[in-house]
Length: 196
Image (cartoon, rainbow, N blue to C red; front, side):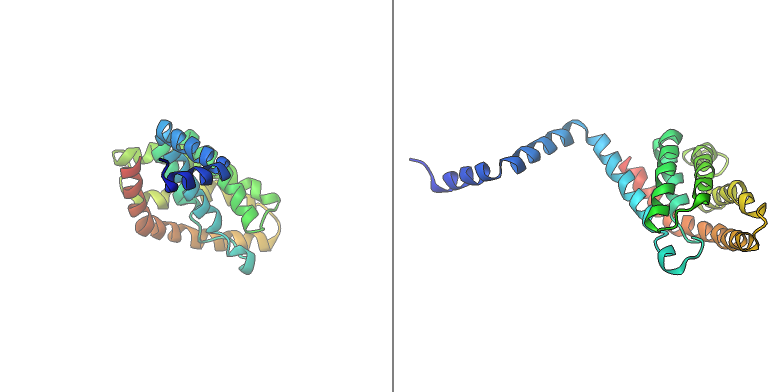
């Protein structure tokens, strides 16, 4: 004798074949590639946070003195390697400018300094055993490196407005990154240390 709930379940499965097949495929992929899926999810979440951290530029049209790009680039490059960190820096530098609708010819100048921080951060930090073991100090140094490589582009322009924008950005971004690394970096590194 056939049970009615089994017939009902079978009919539902037949109506939603694609969903069932997709679910089984997803579960299979999750079992086979758990580390890769976890890495993808972590990097995606960090990328979304970094991308939308400069979203306020849509309203204020100000340089993004507050940003999570430096923190997430450093975290990704330390936990997943400088190559992944450099690729992440490239993608997030572009997506944050697009999301904030602030894409301009100078947006390209943000990419090489961010890639440089992706390569320098793991070397300096060395999983806490490098020359710099303090995350706030690492944030300060990475912010100084980024600004030292990127801001001369604005300083050498004859446009006074660009120079003022550059001074404004550097004077606020460096101390803010110190605070971001102090208050957000330490919990983030603790969580990533347990997940990775």
